[in-house]
Image (cartoon, rainbow, N blue to C red; front, side):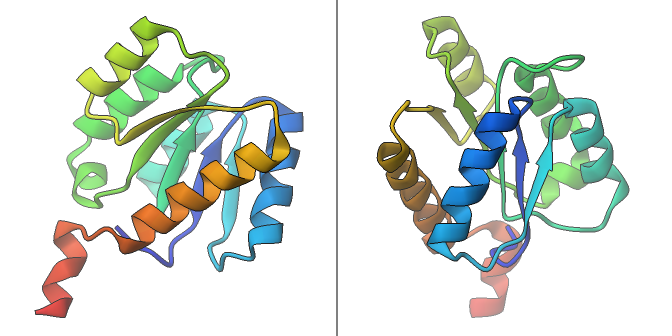
Length: 144
């Protein structure tokens, strides 16, 4: 996990993209934000670049390739799996079947997008701060 890498946000709702962009700007994290409204383009970016993102925040209900399918493709790609990129779902849908399916695919978190700006901001802070403190196999070796 590259804690200085970009945060990839896969979200097809432009309003949600704007709100998340505003929240991250207020929080003043140093990570670049890269938005994708299309999972296929996000997958191409992740597989075709050497960039190691810090986090992936993905909606579930996406056109072309839904979030579950995208997670499966990332997980099955050895190069991407070795980058230890935390992949979290951020969805308006909290259907039990989605939560069960997500965790059966080794998801690192499933969050429901609140309708309240301040609650959303608090969730983002918790997510980012948790992963900033977390260690991953390919970066802990430098600490020894």
